[in-house]
Length: 297
Figure 1 (tube, rainbow, N blue to C red):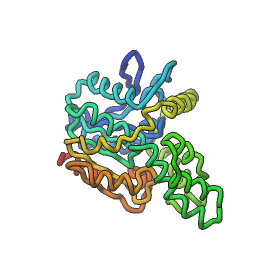
Figure 2: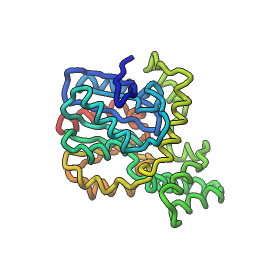
Figure 3: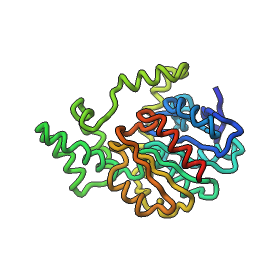
Figure 4: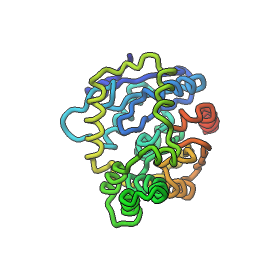
């Protein structure tokens, strides 16, 4: 197990393809998911690139969060400190879901230290992600006659609601089997089979789950989690790639259009027949898309 000490905290990280260039740094989602489930894809990309993947501070194998607040900008600053500690001149942030928010804020904060940036089904705005979830699930609730859940979705979509309230409401939407099937969410059994097949020693101890709960609470309590980072897209001068699943509920139609309209030197690849976990649902296509973009960028 490899660790870096950043601001007095131990951060678990993995490296693949050391000596290859360019460098990709994977920023996991969740919040609090860890880099564990990306290990197989990181190894594949490591055949071409130098890949750095790590558990964010407070997540799984990294040190648990201590007292005091923790927010988006704190995680972004720690990512920059990792770059310095690893002696990497510049790299390409590749952020999935919540990690896409971190990737965008990192690229905006440290533009001189990136070669490009990749967003994988990103969350750039708590409000618009909440609305994307509501928009995706509402037709299913209306079809099934679930008036309470349909009303909740409409409140998120149509009401005067704060980003925090909208996100909290979206997290309370009933993702039952009918909704998951309607929205093309993968079955847990398929995901578990994937993990068992590709990750031989996850090194996850019992205390990792407690860290996960504490981390999410800190992030959901932070004000900067609910900020709208979409305006940052137009300020990123380096190449930007948006990878999005056809049925993804995190990066909805609104965000996809904003990226297309606002991101200079931006390109979008939609992976068909998959939802939020593009690197799992279409692994070969995902690897190919990232390789082609990173080599060109």
